[in-house]
View 1 (cartoon, rainbow, N blue to C red):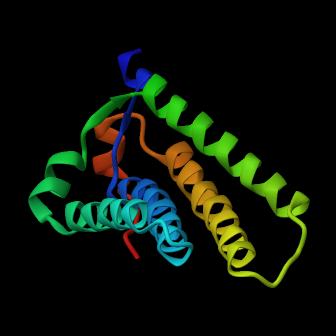
View 2 (cartoon, rainbow, N blue to C red):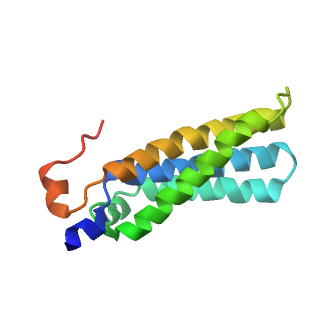
Length: 142
């Protein structure tokens, strides 16, 4: 019964969630720099670099991978990803097409969040519910 209430973090799941956060940080930072908000842009780019550094550190990944997380926490992350993806999907249809830098960033941001958020949600749904399942049926790392 307790096995159904947890999710085991896999490398693919961790990378997919980090990809969404990285996309948001880099696109927002880039847009801020282009539009003259240098301090905010540097802050967002710094957050993106921190995500990359955290992912590249093998010791940190080893600590996180295989960790058991309550399914309620994962469910909350999934709900947030779905709501943000729906919001961005609607944004794609209500934004008036224009040939400005702001519009290009808006489309890139929206498409990236929808695609990466959808992939992360799929990885959350597919993630193993117990350590035994995770060890006996590991996801293939391509």
